[in-house]
Image 1 (tube, rainbow, N blue to C red):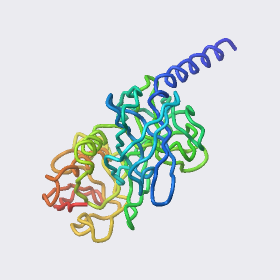
Image 2: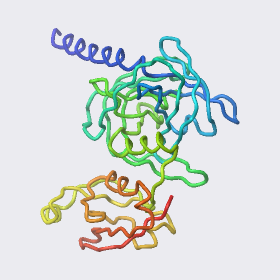
Image 3: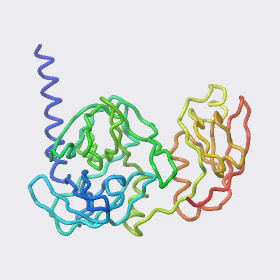
Image 4: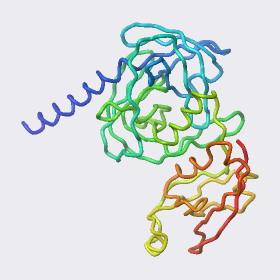
Length: 309
């Protein structure tokens, strides 16, 4: 019994410490748009009042009001949004809210404790806790009339509800490792990771208000490679193609469902972030990109030409 009590006390100490660190940085958003007022959450991540939120929270809006846990309120303007990563950056006017440190979701492990902070159902400053239930998930998102996938999403069982979107998912050290983005079902929450790829996206939104990227038109999930292939290549995983958009650069070049991408541009592809990084920036647009795929236990070389998205 004492062991159980000690464990609970340790768990409670971590959650309350993280909540105390992150709560002052998280705001409840009221977004003005053509459809009326929308709601969500956002987290302060710079000293000069920039907020990070979900793109779908501010879809159709340009400005609104942010209310913080101490009752302070500030107006905000939309700096830029990227629906394909479901991230957006807002600018507030001198809130005084402390910035939350950004972590690295690439270091997360399944089973690790995480804490979600946001404003679900209008209940400001709500804190829930759980574990990382899965990594590398895919989340469907809408870009105009096209549906696309956000890859490499974090799955957690920390309770999330409408209004949590745009709020912080923090690790046990109080670092923001994800931006809560959706509720997929009972006991199932998703968050866009904070990692080197999304940091690049955030940087582009800050500097120019938009993200230019190339597009291949495939969706994939990481899988272990057969031992003989792994030994030959010196890598353990590849990216199985689970979606090929008809007429996309990948489809035109001859990439098929079930192919396993093992290299791209000469770089090992062990997870989807490798492809995501290669697609960012104007230099990737219309530049030939060689892929090596494993197809029916044989290596096939394919030259793709990513188009601008």
